[in-house]
Length: 316
Image (cartoon, rainbow, N blue to C red; front, side, top):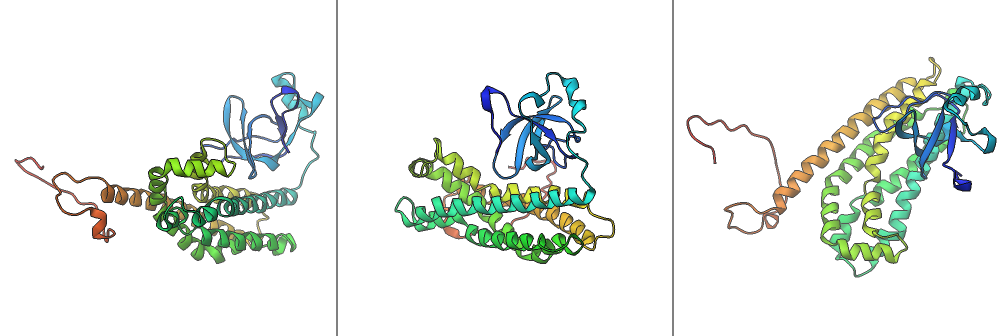
């Protein structure tokens, strides 16, 4: 575990090179000394290096103790040979283990959210059954799916590297994942609205379960975990591909899974934006409208953009 003993900021040395794939990640080379600013559970830490800040996989570094800590920036170069050389094969195994560990942590977070908060909330009288159902969406199904995915990935690690089919595992489950995550996206804006409408009650409920104030923040963040995890898959698989043998039978599926995850993440973002707009149309007042509430008319069946052209007159 990462510690900050004696009032010193935690410092780590990179065991391997890491090339960022997202703007919020931190690139570094083997031997670089990184100051850790946020050591979080889940396999990714935040740190700074050379004036830059970002996230990086925690098992790519090791903590420096006592006199190992550099006394000046120049001391970084002296540590290049601290870690023994590691083969490309060994590096592949480190990356794969990181994928499995973060997958396990993500599943545990979903389990914790459901078991500690959402299911007890459903059994209480704090909110109506409809509101709780809106908050949860299809999270139970997502959690069950992620457990199966985690177990499938763990099984991959139990066979020789040349027989491991991590990409094939993801590709075989991609259609199911596609449906689950798009459905979660469709519901998420309504879940956020429910959070806002019942913020006081939900905040008190979360704090009664031991969450630090403001309790609503933890619930809001937790309901965004599926999107955060989805965005990580291309980065994790790209790193795995970088350290695979060229003739590895899983290489094509790894590349295919990367592409599929990027597409799915984009579709999820677009779906959320669309559903947020639909929610806005359904809930905000319409100028001049004297009929019944829009929500009473049912859900929006079709929505599209249109271009309105006017010549010589003002469009109202």
